[in-house]
Length: 101
Image (cartoon, rainbow, N blue to C red; front, top):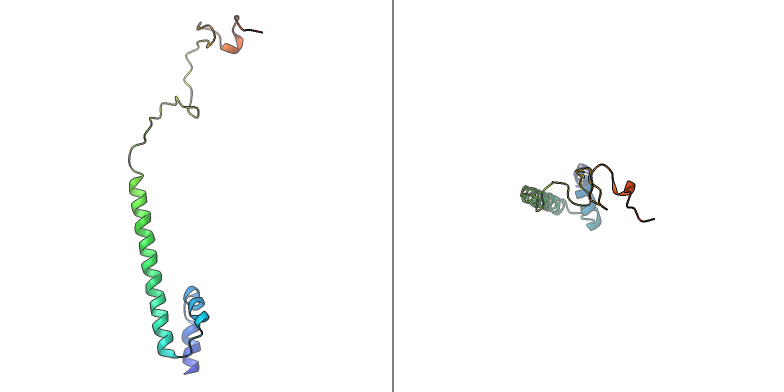
């Protein structure tokens, strides 16, 4: 029976082998039962997290709360060639003739 136990344990996935190894089960039917439970728990956990991921992905399909016109600090600026200091066109505020020195 020890040979059967060793052969079975060596064929287990590493995650299940690690869980089973800590309990040091020496009874073959108990080992098989515990390995099956660990496998089923792993599958249940995996499907749970997959479902949560799918649900999270669907919620991100909603529209963005802000438009992408670029008016924010991180967006692209659409310059109209008008000076911010005097409002005239043809120069920028850093080249404004009315600049305070």
